[in-house]
Length: 170
Image (cartoon, rainbow, N blue to C red; front, side, top):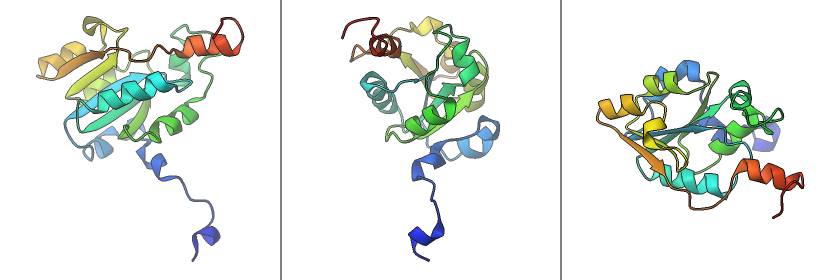
């Protein structure tokens, strides 16, 4: 049957969105070394994309864990954040070439997910000193690496939201 007659087909990138409750089943399919990072990734911008490409270069697979909408709200970024709901943020990240898989966490930190994934490399953006990165001690204790990747592009979602609202200049 021709594709047009089969009905809607899910984009291939959606296969990279993984339910955290099924971690054992899909984690075995990701090639090692596994790089893990996490964040809200609300309004995706060049800084995010560059950061994720640099994170992926540290290993063979990149797993990105997103704060759920409730978890993101508890970060104190504002009552209307995240602006994009979790399903949209997952799809956007999954569509990026650098991302091998994307999942989410409901808790305030991804600590339990990091323990379950046992990444070889744990990375965060340059505003996070290594000693403050959740899961760093465990990854280091297993012989893994923990990196704080410096920002290459001076972008932030918070500043972008302020600019859109007209509360700061360009």
